[in-house]
Length: 139
Image (cartoon, rainbow, N blue to C red; front, side, top):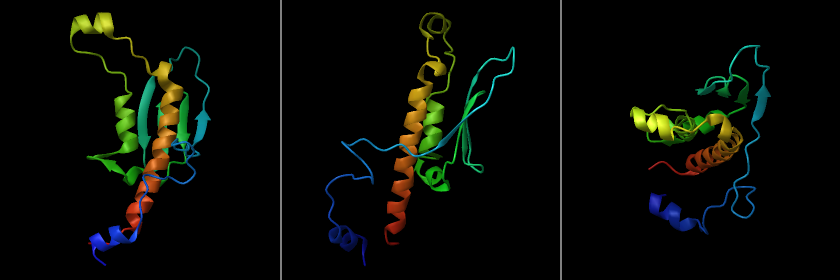
């Protein structure tokens, strides 16, 4: 079967992820772990991925576990979609002094819940995309 006959044999009515409702991607059931913060310690953002353990460390308190191996395999360029999100939400200090003083107001803590939800949804998309790719014939 050639690639073109594979495409002709399947009908495609647009993207349909299993369990979607009103075009909203369902959240992947990642387990959220919360640790107590030590006295005098600050809750600094980490935003690091531990692919081998299937974990994402968000900050000193919160981590997500249960990230399937397939989710790390879905790449955007040279890194996974999950790693791309982690990189985009890191706190970065602008090099320019004026910008750093007047406009550097981004704090990860303000977006933490949004990022967690986004990671869960991107995890779903990543896993299902890799399943679809796995079903495609080799060319």
